Image 1 (cartoon, rainbow, N blue to C red):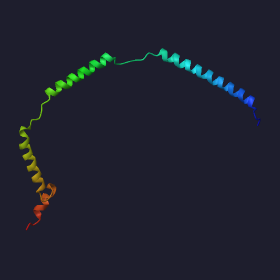
Image 2: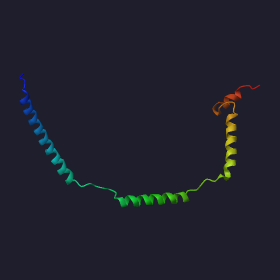
Image 3: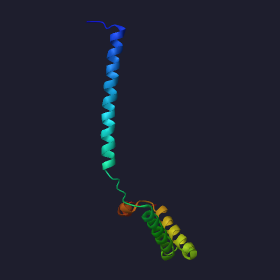
Image 4: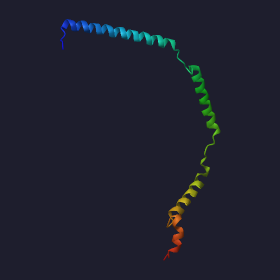
Length: 108
């Protein structure tokens, strides 16, 4: 294996540097040429986006007036019915699937 002198090393490093710069310039020119040839597609322009946002806002406002609102008039009656259902479920001695077996057991 041959050792390079400092002058030969500098010369080889300089040639490598020139080769890398030339390659990178060639690559950059290719990217610039490709990038300028392809137009950017925009599906929605700013005015279309604004119009869509306004339409959606109007739909939301109209829907808030159309959708029926729950009133609290029936709340006490509904609460009573729910409490009665819970009371029936809690007061059972056995689950509903075991009730036929409970009839067989003699209760004291």
